[in-house]
Structure formats: C-alpha cells, structure tokens
Length: 211
Image 1 (tube, one colour):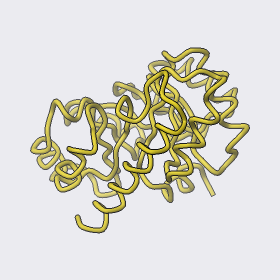
Image 2: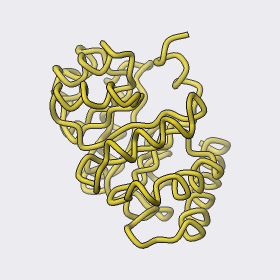
Image 3: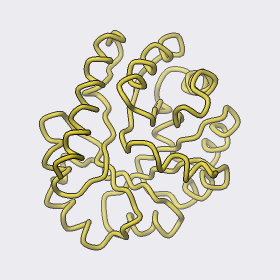
C-alpha cells in the first residue's frame, strides 16, 4: 500500500506544532495523537525541526503521518526524506516541491490562495490542498471553490481556524483543518494541548456527523 493510500484513511486533521523543541516533541505529539490527530506537523521555523521530526518518526512509525510545515524547496524535501518524514506541508504552491514529495512517496499538502494555484497543485499531483489563510478568505470563498475542484481532492482550511469557526467552514465544504496557534504555542503543557486537541477532534467528529 502506498503512502498516499495509507494516509487517505486518516482523519484530515493536521496538528501544527510550531515552535516545539526536540525535548518536548514526544509528550506534546502524544497528546494530540491520543486525541485522534494522525497528521503531525513541525514547521521548519521551529527549533531544530529535523531532530524533532526524526524523533516523531522513530516514536510513531506508521501509526501517524509525521513531517514538516513551511517547506518551500525541493532541497528541504530531500532533507526530510533523509529523516523518514512522511508529510510535507507548504505555505505556497510550488510544483517542484509537490513532485519531489511524491517522488519520495510523501504526502504533499501545498498551500494555495487562488483557483489558479489550486489547479497548478492538482496538476503537479497533489490530492490535499491547504487553503491559507482560510479565515481571511471566508466560507463563501470555499463554497465557490468547491463548485470547480475535482471530487477526489481533499480541501483543508488552515490559518485562523478555531473551535468557533470550524462549523461554517465545514458547512461550506472543507474536508478537514490544520490547527496551529489555537492548539499549541511554545510553553503550553501537554495537559493543555491534550484538552485542546480533544475539543478539536470532538468538534470535527460532530461536524462530520451533521454536515
């Protein structure tokens, strides 16, 4: 089974652990994993991100899809592949980054802002699209996008997502979410993160049941 097919079985919820350190990555990641998150992202502008990702890979194995965010070059993709990362999340749409990720059988979640960028990402092979910054664009933007996006593409809303606005984006048609600063900030304890992660996954499950 390829990585793309394996990850398709995971709930499309990404825990964005920006600023996490290697020494705290496992307890924090365990908190979100136990809540139900299976995509775990360490942005590359975090302290020693490759070390944190290597520890995640060693700890979770194939139980979770762990990797990096803020990936903007094919060279960074190669570095991630060398530590066993399985997830590549980008703030932008760079077909070279997408193709490089797929070459290593990694999940690519490119960011996009316009329909042109969305279809460029799809043409490069992406099946997950990260609408960013989603809160700035709004739910009506999502509704319009969904009328033209292919059905196999999973649309994630990222940027300004909170427990208060998940519902409107879910009703507009997004498939999942990336949760960052509202889930984890440097200094948060694993107990705080566990509570927030549980609340987000509970909300996600409720939205899937009703929308």
